[in-house]
Length: 98
Image 1 (spheres, rainbow, N blue to C red):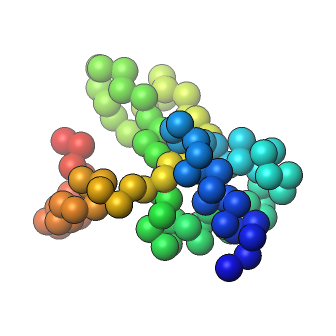
Image 2: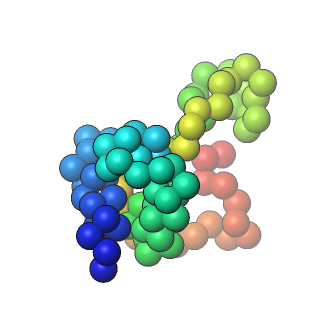
């Protein structure tokens, strides 16, 4: 395994929470385009996932709300004891956040 690819995962393992791709790119000294491919590799392997980026304003909670600024994508480490991973997927692909 490439040492840089492993460094990407280690950066998330040592982070206190979700990180943006731009933060990791700066920390590792790589271009965002190069980093995106490495992050997607770890997403496919189930080690990283995209963190929820829509803040809960407590009113409509509609995806795509024009009053909520869309933040850059953030990713987080998936832990082995994550309860979301242990639960079966919802029937029909329905969102669990209803």
